[in-house]
Image 1 (cartoon, helix red, strand yellow):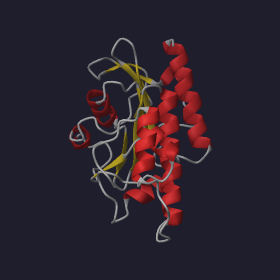
Image 2 (cartoon, rainbow, N blue to C red; image 1 turned 180 degrees about the vertical axis):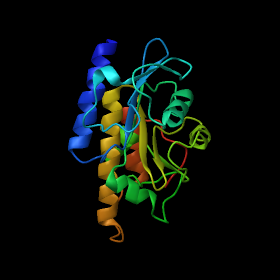
Image 3 (cartoon, rainbow, N blue to C red; image 1 turned 180 degrees about the horizontal axis):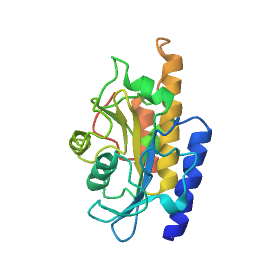
Image 4 (cartoon, rainbow, N blue to C red; image 1 turned 30 degrees about the vertical axis):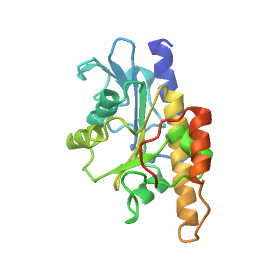
Length: 218
């Protein structure tokens, strides 16, 4: 895909996420890695609902701005996922309501923030890690992501929001949407003793679809 087309896709999918209420105001950011090792990323203080393809931040392989507006302050977050997940070609970070709410709950297991509720959650997201709170833009969040050793494609930032990597931008968007819907299901069913997928059902999905899940049972 050409860089022009990638720019258009970032804007199209960003607008879709914004218009469906998945990240309000100027929150959230998107990046896509390019063939030359650089990447495109949404600018700081930009609404995902009104991005301009020509003003997206173009970063070089060293992470420094080459052209466009100043990039999001969450560049260290995106960079850490690219560095630890070699297959990652896109990263999406949102402030979606139910995922943020989930990240605040005291019972959440940092190694598996959600139980195996649906097959599509496992197929799109695998398992989701929860990392401690860091102020937005704090470079220390990169160390927390690197500490996961590339085992997770979906991560919840405590009191902040989800961040998901994918082998395409579309895959990352689909996964973060699935994470948000699963967080919503968890909140709806919390305290009702719902029936989750059994270990045998998880094993079947893993075998059938070639899933790679962290070595941890919820």
